[in-house]
Image 1 (tube, rainbow, N blue to C red):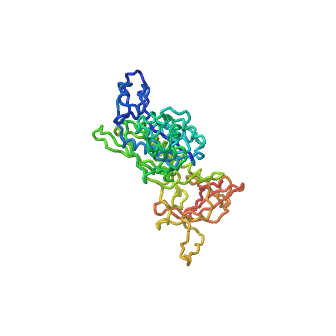
Image 2 (tube, rainbow, N blue to C red):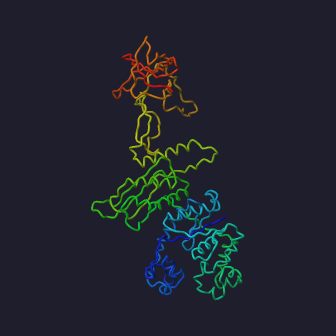
Image 3 (tube, one colour):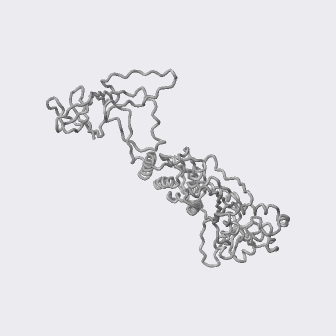
Length: 520
């Protein structure tokens, strides 16, 4: 079992010009909790007293801790990290624990997995200090040791190495060390190895029995059950922007945080999304500007790929002009369905090609506009020239409803063939599964002329460059009287003396012959 521990910190980079530059630090009523980069370079460390911090950094500004905001940010990071493992735990001191023992092979090994986790945390707006160990508390110790720069090795995979590395860590990393002041220093206990060598009864009497249990869990000598972070039943993520945003392109950077959370939520629920809504709350800078605006983005194949969702969102925002500056964003997952895992067969399946084509059409539609991407759509019409039309591309979930029974007003083709016998429902009560569309009695050519070409007659035979011979039975089509473009035609398959095949018809009323298509 391997665990990863991450400690998230803000990504504010500060450049030091001189010692007079203002700096900031989080603090409680007595001590410094987290200094920024400027204060850290001036000597301010976590655990320093307020007076000592002001002596090192006279221009230090102390900030109060917002517990609710920190918890919300930590939960957002945990939600995004559910994309890598189903077991994510919110731990002590703004730390997130990940059980990755079963995920390393899936993501290409530990190094690749850590790289993906680091990129995800950075995309959420934070930096991370990671530690990896066979135990949860061991990973927690290594992550905090890296934050304080007191450990040279923070990735451990073997239990035999864990004890040796943890023994070298300072005892100040113990979670309860701050509550005991300098008691460890007074008894000459500097490292965890020193703490382990002390008499157990004396340690329990002075520091409480909990520290012995903690040591056993950190070194893998006792079980460490934890309650995993549970993703909410429905997805709704909100982000308050640090400054007002006036361009739609700049919203994509902030929206990436919400999309990463959506991808983690979908992985936790084994689901995929085909449509989501992005709600923007505007600053009332203009008199008639609306308070909120909504963007709906839909695509054909349900997915949980964050990169694909961000690509579609980028194209949507590039074509959008904001009515007013944006101060807050909200993402809602509208259409969620069960995720179909990719096939694990040796050879690719046909469904993969269909999904690739659907994603290509989605991207073209997002880039060029839905009205500029068209598709062929079959129509319920027996006239060949009206049996298919060109319409604007629509995602599969927005396209035509599923074909059911044919409406009674739909015309039927009239042929000179005898009608098929009527089949009754079997006695078992199971309904017959009949095809929605009638199977054509004659083959159809691969190329149909947009306008039929009138043919000449020579020796009572239609002529197209060479005399043609009819080689099929008659297929009569009478349709279109309902829209004023009625046709009465007798269709035939014809061939010339070189073996080329054509699709002809003869007008019943005039007797004229026309060429309507070519066979391949």
